[in-house]
Image: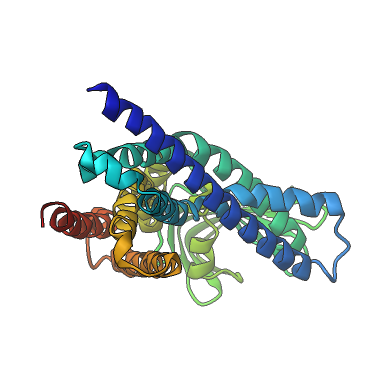
Length: 365
């Protein structure tokens, strides 16, 4: 590589990172302010210490700010190339033999590396912080009575009873579509935490507010064992509540997702939501690179536009359109209409190909 392109690449990277950083700081600050106002609205009727509110805002901030990074890259690209065009630096660089691809390469490579750093380093940190945020939120606001956990030892479910007691349900395998548990064990505890009884069943079927048990062995505390062919135990659980009790994908780091997905599938539950989120993280570096190409379309031909505000407005609208299309394709993936890998990668591939086509036309006429 000759000296001039090397110096120019460093110059481009510095200005690109500065523009993206400024846009990201502005957007993240706005989102943090909105989230803080919403949190204050929710706690207005509760006596929550200020330090806890501040902790919740800080804990949620990394995950919220991650969602703004593609927009920051898009708008930062527009700002970078617009400034170069208006200062005639781009004209001078083009006259010295630097092509549009040499203009774009530093920003594309930088955005790709940003994506790798986000999924490998920043994402695990933000996931851990969001998981702590959700635990605090559940304690303060939601008060969820039912908690689901899936591990190598099987499926564990805790539900609150009407009298204040708790029931712990364990099963090695389940069917999320039918609400059927195999080799189910139910432990009943009083409101004071005292063990009441244990119920073992070969099968447990969740049917309209009732666990229908087959081949039941009842072991009350300090009493003789009883055996029954069938038994019905009331419950407030629904299939939807069981599915929603799983850890959300956003609270699991990039490195932990594959193991959790495998465990979830072995337990008999659908992992489509977690699989799609994992694939969206895998393609994040390519998504950020595609945002650079989209931003270049709005800025490399800046002399044709009268105002910079039109460039910004067009790029922002395009960004929202990309997000909208991506959400639609993701919905198809979650419904099983298209493969998950296609749902995650297809929008990015289409955006990249369209952008490259326009840039080739711009460069070669």
